[in-house]
Image (tube, rainbow, N blue to C red):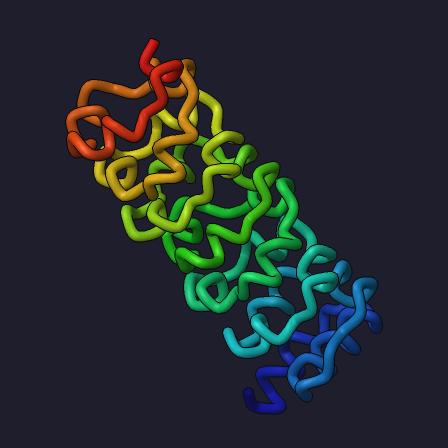
Length: 196
């Protein structure tokens, strides 16, 4: 980044924000206070490599607005350790496009509470590849409304453990198209109580 571009970004920032941007661009780790003061413009100045270099605590300290302003490449750079620190409030700020950019392993690292906060547009953006990484604990956290929003292709991408963890309320919320997308082997994974 040129000095002129950096100056244009940092001119409107507070001293704490300027320090954070300067430290990140210099390859230094920022603390949680500096991370919590980053604006959308400041976080957008980070390369994907700089985003992935943030500590999990710094990621957890980012504002929802800062997280919501990440581009697809920055979102794809989030590590599994960072993802485990992402809060439900931060997940709420992600767009469907950003959700689609999350790597499968990163999606699997989100806490069940973070997954539970996904809205239906975000859930419907989950790909079959991503769905294959969703854990049984995350599936257990999904509401019937969320499950009804998952695409049939993504539902069919769920792992055996994730399908086996579906409860009766969740199974009853599935659409005909979703059930049709499951293979006979996947149907056999549903527990008898889930089919009751």
